[in-house]
Length: 206
Image (cartoon, rainbow, N blue to C red; front, side, top):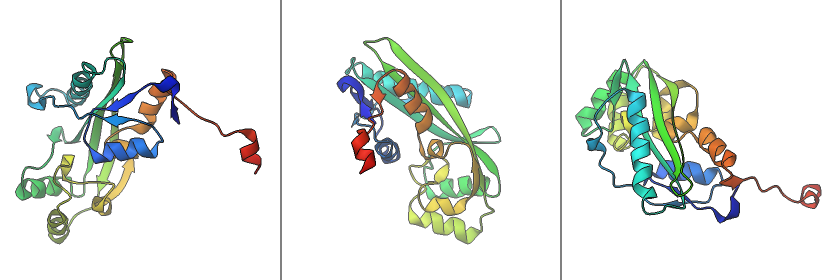
């Protein structure tokens, strides 16, 4: 992948997981974390909530970089209609992991892609079903003590030690990590923000 015609892409997030996913996809981008106050958005239907937050984060950065393409995202875990955010304490993490144990939950990531000067914007939500194995108290305590559950929606990281808690998933893996890369790349290609740089024919024959 390469940025078409020197178009600049900005990730409006300080998440190392989203940074890693875009880097793995071969996209050139810079990072400008949004300082948008998430508490200013009233809690509503989960799909609308994460999509609104993603748009707010992207718009926060686009005001300063009107010619750039901004990517914003927000992820939550949903089980039985209850939204699980990031745990605030070991007890909170313990409660979340016990709730997820042996159950299927949904990971929702709202994403937004926009360029203010071109008056182009896209926003959507991707859902992935995740099935946890039944966790013992020992497993829960061990995982909490690793420190990994903190700063993660739902108190686990599927790309880290938390992979041992997951029985199976149905849907996008990168969505669970924090960004539905397939959908994001599709939009960037469609809008001619990035393009595939094919090797020269002679390079393929060597």
